[in-house]
Image: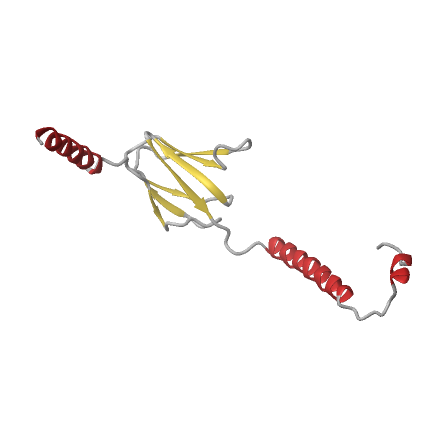
Length: 147
């Protein structure tokens, strides 16, 4: 019984220790929280740093890096130029954020509509042929050219 009590107390201690709040790394504060292309964002750094490094498309084969001088201040203004994932880094702190387009890209909407018309137009054409009421014999169907 004594061994069972020790095992229970050891497991309870392990669970309590793993749930104990740990210190979290300092994070950036963005205002507004969701950056948009062409709109100025105010970034508050957790600690003073000389440079804020902005990496567009991090971990890709074609990242674009932009460095912004902070002059030792903890507040910096930044205007995003590209949409997508952006990594912010200053000193020992880092953060990923997503930059949005100002509105939906018209080219993307156009391609979506054209693809839908092709897809559903082809499906309608195929169903009309499938359910067409033809009284054709097997020989006449065999003589039809393949399309």
